[in-house]
Length: 188
Image (cartoon, rainbow, N blue to C red; front, side, top):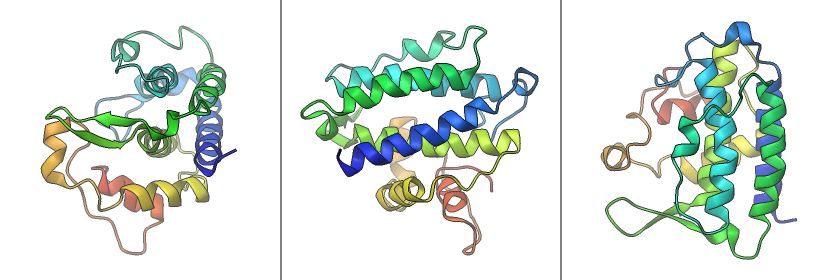
């Protein structure tokens, strides 16, 4: 198993645990990701797995998955765990890890697998913060996401992609995941 697959598996396992600890009484709570309350963020995370299955298989982005109720009365961690198995299998296909995200203005952007890792780690932080869970994350996946993304996604291009708010400050001695979250526009 490649290191990328191992990192994705660790990130998805950690996020599964975070989602498994979420209760329906927490659904209306706000998250650091301004577009989502806890329920909407959980649904977004769950929808991400089939979304990345399609991308890993060479398909185009299907944003309609995020508009659908993926949880539908189920416990989010259970639904996410099922999707994690499917997406990990998809990433193991030949060439899947090399797929790159097309940029809106043309050209190719980051590897889709790196975006998936960032999404699991960063939204895991959002969920942990909103629900009072440990937000330090898995050390290996946090380091990988930080090394691949921190400083490599300038504020100037964020408006073009519609992804992530401008960077915010974080103390130099803040945990690595807090610094990464601030870099992607979260208030730490």
